[in-house]
Image (cartoon, one colour):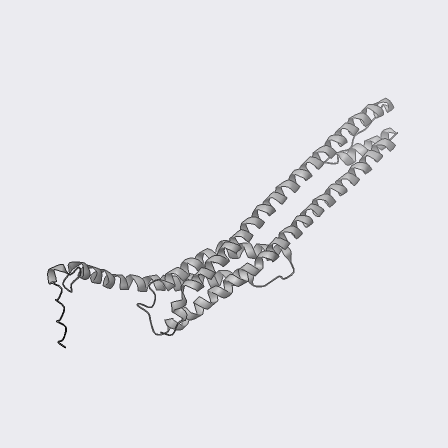
Amino acid sequence: MSALPDPDPIPAEQSSVTPSDPRVNELWEFSRSQLPSLALAHCIGYGLLLFTLITAVDLLIPPQLLNPTWELQALGGVVERVVPIGLVGAVLVFWGGKRARSRWEPFCLTSLSWFSLVAGLLLFLMIPLGLLNTARLDRQTTADIQTRLDQQATEITQIQAAIDNANTPEAMAQVIQQLDSQGRSITIEDPEQIDPLKTQLRESVAQMAAAAESQGKATLRQRRLALLKNGVKWNLGALIASVLLALIWKLTGWARSRS
């Protein structure tokens, strides 16, 4: 049996890429020119991660556990001040894969990849606590405003009782002096002025009570709205951050491999 003839070689003019192709040289030169930029990106990334660490320490130390206000504000600070800079720093550090790396960087890259997963899990677990603290602070705010309104109502009732019991010029003058913001004393010479003064004082006190109640309800609405907006923003931000950190861990498997 005769051997099969050798296949015809591919003509040089039909080859799409040859060692002397200018496109290959151009890509090679471009890759070489990016190496200094990669080193600069890595340095800036490590610097941003250090800033993130400093900010996190400032926010979380000393801890005030079981304090819903501190816990919710700490979550907001992490979401708004720590996570954005940390994500940018991590992207810059991982940029370029294993190219242009120092000897100590593989360990840092592996640690940072696993830390991304741990940080994402911690942020995800903080979401139920953030929702719970938002509800607790809402109840606390409502209770504080209601207590203040009850105190004002009690003071208004006492003032109305003092007005009703002031049947002499001296007693009426004392009531008016107590209601005057500057505490100025007056003299009532005609006892017939007592009833008209009572009517005027009752109207003034009723207006004060209505204004205090309206202001208290407006304050309650503003505080609850601000709390709701911050709670939604921070808890949703924690969810987004946890997903992004998990993606960083997933997409940096090359940093955890030994090859």
